Image (cartoon, rainbow, N blue to C red; front, side, top):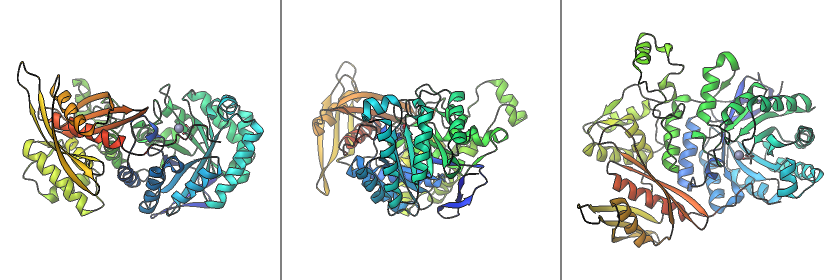
Length: 535
Ligand code: KIV
Ligand code: ZN
């Protein structure tokens, strides 16, 4: 039996009491590994909103960032540690003194905190990236865990690139760091190279052969380069891992990380096989997915499991007929269990604030302040004026799509577009530009090959960012021609890539909002990448 966790009604405490070993700790790294996806950068306010959504989801551990990466990352972790009470707050740190001290400082205000330190353990990483011998790596890991343990009670240690590391060396370093005070041992498949059976066998081998493995919780962290992140994580769970590191919508470096919603629902749906539980409040899954998608500008593909628009849609007559006769003929999960509403059409322009609030509550969306609710309600009213049928999908956007540009250097003000057959489209846009604490309004006109092109040119003539447009995509949120369009814009400049998003029934307005949102992300601070050599 290993040391376990006990979740209390308020806050989480790591218990010295041996647990029954049938619960899985959900460690969410959307704000750290997820944010490392090119273009997924979030600002402090956005990170706080995501952290609160994760808290509502009852995630056990939130990896809120990599404190040494930038001043912005440090401040975001610090703010999350101050404001989130029901999840443990963690910062990543390379196995070096500066990183660990900065991480400790960032998580200090948290009710329950963790430092997650790591060093690479594969031959290829030790030789070519770290340029250190295996002995030096063990020494550095042990010293780092001891230092971290003096600053924080809860230490996680990761063997970066464990998936390609020598199991004999893994046993040696893990035994040493457990003796030094690490209580969670994470086995990452950093490059997404593992295959489920083999990865599960490796986890089993480590747990069975490390003499002090009973003093730590084993954890798994898989990347999705071969599309196997969830399968590999579940295989590791079957082999004895009791923490899974994952992200909302599977966001993460390259092809992403294991997706939280898929891990959680697989464990819940296949109780018969796993016999394990997570503490996740599953109706909060869809709101969290929508929020992360709208903040990062990474759309969720329609056929994505659990949270994709088609995940519970049934086109075939045979399937529809079967479900009407007996739901379980074709349904393995209930849509409402993960936050999808049973009713499709919900509110209209005569609906009041209370009806709006209670429908959002049914969808698992709550607000921390009345001011946030009031802002969302005015966005709902504005939408209901132009769109008669407001669907759940619209409500998710209205609730999560705050004035995306408000915290940044630019904010959308107004737009006028003229398209005449045979003439180049013209856009006149008015943008609020930050001037110290206040905003000044600047108007510009642009022409282009289409109205979107004209709009972006008009905005560029105000911002003069010199950024390169990498991607432009529009996605209809609901069916029908009065659907809101959700636009993603990806910009790059000097090797940095950022996304922006906007939603409106007018897709040119949504496009302008998305471009402005991307410009605001571009203006955010530049960060150190955790997996760059820094030792
Ligand atoms: O993929 C990885 O190895 C990581 C570690 C820092 C845990 O993200
Ligand atoms: Zn990772």
